[in-house]
Length: 208
Image (tube, rainbow, N blue to C red; front, top):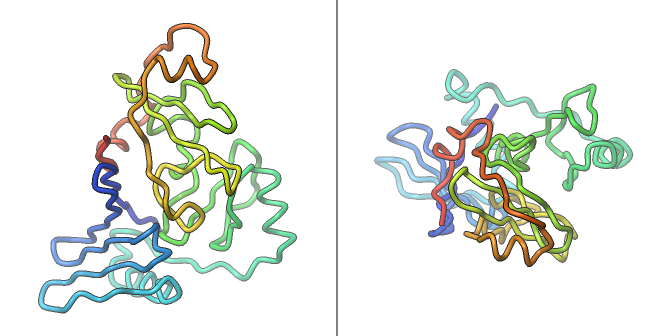
């Protein structure tokens, strides 16, 4: 199952619409709960712990649209740590992963049913990567402007493209510049190319 969340960065709003009737808003990447709005019903706040039950409800009622939920068997710490070591995935894959996997080819979903390649903008699908500087951030471009994803000091990792359990306070992309890029250590003028699947950017984000 894959859910197509939308991140309005200026409003810091992470939302999902299943249809014209059912809408969700995730607070702090779901860590502080997910608000469910449904026409004809009162809004309810689904807790982080109860969200898996809602995923099952979505799967049972919308599998033709979002696919079926597959809850994997519980992973051992050794399995999860080996996966993280090989792939570089910054979070424990508690929702499972596909096999076989390599550093450049793996699949994992997070608690909000978003694929790992999407959350990391792997292979520059959403935006094209210009450069990354550990401790500073990743500079990327939509083909017109330069944007920056920051560095989380507590986790010692780059932020994902949307808030999540690991980075609940993730601010998303910020508008950057050639000057900031060069101050970070980039030499020369960047070639601004859009991501390989720019439709993902339009579908899932409102940029600053």
